[in-house]
Image 1 (cartoon, one colour):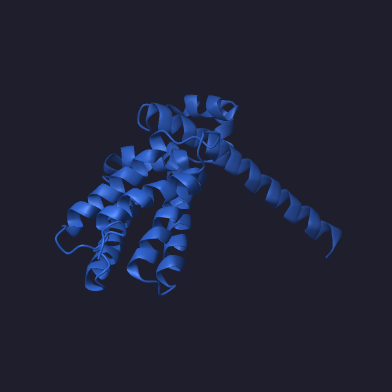
Image 2: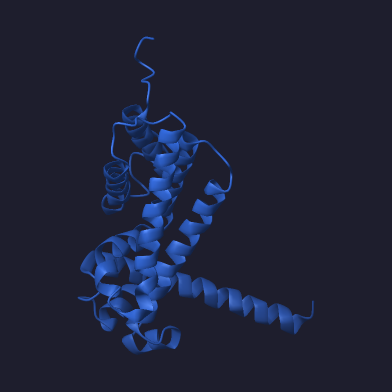
Length: 211
């Protein structure tokens, strides 16, 4: 590889790293203050640069939140698709999806909070229609796993899958509002304990019930 090409690739990598750092800081302020309430100047201050300098990296506030959300969702769906393609039974799939979800919270906590709080507002714009599509796909995915579990005899048939889906969705993703990487429990341990509670209630036959 010639020196010029190495320099160009090094510069591109540096720019990508810097862009990711800026977006991480901006995502934090959007999550804390709200997207609509945050000005470009406040976003720039959070990123440690002047307001005008922010436009060197992004053409608008919409572009910033778009990249924050699309990056989070692209990674989440890549992980979900890997789980779904593995051909696991329903309990194993549910476990893997919950662990994947908590990894998303660990890696993109601010983006998850923005997604929860701002999706309805942002989806009024054609640019953010993918948020609604993602929510619908998310619901189909989880309900499908729950229905599979009932069909396999692994999950209780007397429980409504729609209600179970909402319970799992809300209890898992609301963790983004309080989860901290330096907290007492890491994401994997929280996922493990959540699953212990959820799966015991879902199982068609409780492991603690005598036969």
